[in-house]
Image (cartoon, rainbow, N blue to C red; front, side, top):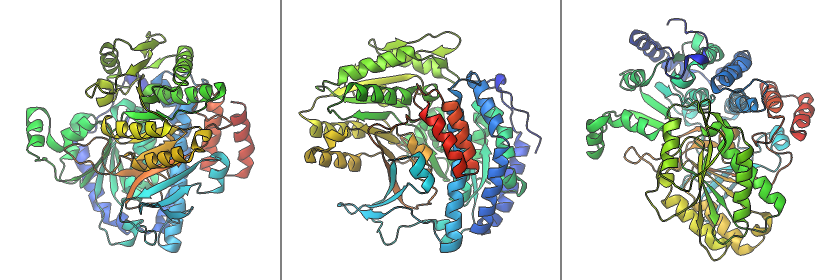
Amino acid sequence: MPTPPSPNPSSGPHLGPTTSRADLDTAVRQLAEKRKSWSALGAQRRLELTDQLIASFATVAQRWVDGCLEAEGIPPANALAGEEWLAGPYLIFRNLRLLRGSLRDIARHGRPRIPGPVTTRANGQVVAQVIPSTLWDRIFYAGVSAEVWMEPGVTADDIPQAAHYREADEGGVALVLSAGNVSSIGPMDTLYKLFVDNRVVLFKVHQTNHYLGPLFAEGFEPLIRRGFLRVVYGGAREGAYLCEHSGIDEIHVTGSDKTVEAIAFGTGEQGAANKAARKPKLSKKITSELGNISPWIVVPGPWSVADVAYQAENIVSSLANNAGFNCNATRMLVTHAGWEGRAPLLDEMRRLLTTLPTRRAYYPGAEERWSRFVESHERSEQFGDDDFGRLPWVLIPDLDPALEEDLCQRSEAFCSVMAETALPAHDPASFLDAAVRYANERLWGTLNVTLVIHPATLRDPAIAAAFERAVEELRYGTVAINHWAAIGYGMVATTWGAFPGADLYDIQSGTGVVHNTLMFDRPQKSVLRAPFRVSPKPPWFVSHRKSLELGRRMTRFEIDPSPFKVPGIFASALTG
């Protein structure tokens, strides 16, 4: 294949390189020749490869971050640069470290070790605790725990794991169509298809961040050199060609539900007709992660002024991170209509939004989506300037939850927009029941949901029972308690993906999972629990002054964990 161009963020999201069809054909053919070799590679050999990948990605980490900062218009010394470390290189190294642990367990015991207890809920559902998984998790994520809940029918005595390591499998060629918003998505999806799903991979870099392609290729060099991975470039035309290529066995997409529909059924009138007739044009397996109208459910309680300030920043940070270009950004704040804390919370959010600098709208189509939401809601409130390609933050308060076809409930904004709706209820327990129905039945998507609840509220047995019932009944792939659900993406040991049950005819947030470094074969969802308030503040909070320094330090730790690096991390965290 030809040598890819050097990183050049200034060339724009639609001016990236394109791999020729002849080179695409060659890449697919070469991968097909290696699929059996990869499938036959044992856990010990793969373990050695993870060590090599950590070393090779370490050489590109700084350049990776620098490219993202230039493309997104973030000054290198700005605290916002910490986002790019934490959402990019840090997660790759954490992913590789956790995979290495699972591969070591497979080599020794035949399957990954589950670090926490395995329990069975009253409804018969089996739950495996996966975080904390190491001493480092207990130190850096104090008070945070995470569970993977299995699909109904799984028993505690036989949780299916790592099927591709226990059963004969001739492998296959997987096409990974990367997203362009969070730089770690494509590489992490690639790692999943390789090490968990046992497939060689053709990784097509998204045109929005094509400048990272050569760096990804450099990081993945140990796999590319052995023929188990190829990195290619192009837009929708190249993606469509590869999806229909006879040498591609399965496809993984992170992006839009419209993209999956186009792949499965085609475009235009013919595509609509194929879908209506339930006749997909492809019979290949398609897995996907396609976004969500992410709800943030606020359970009423006796919040202090400090509680309101903390949770307002928690919520605002979940929108502002990455300029709002996250599939897990909060899009719908769900509050209790009669709660006396509702107005103070919204007012504190407004105050914070007023102080936040606006961000470059670097993701394609952002301006058009932003305008659609603002123009269709007269009560939308804007915060900040819109000069130099930046978009103001937008809060659309007091949305009528009965308006089933409201854009905020049916379409993901994927920009700097958040809405709020207030549900009437007699008490916190009935509010929780109403909020679950609203999230499950009215909001599009099933990817992730966040709930926040004060510890004093949970001391009421009736509310505690309603809360656990809510956690159980929410049909989302990730349910996070008190922390933004994006940490479900960042924990990596947890699963990341839609709640099971969607199909091509109503794809919603997609099918299948990624991350899942313990390699569960039948996961249903992940549940994360955290304290109502944590100290020091999380590094993604908008007021964190040391997130850049902390992001660098945490990344270096994941590359080579050492107790000697812990004091520096805590110093950055405590002074942020």
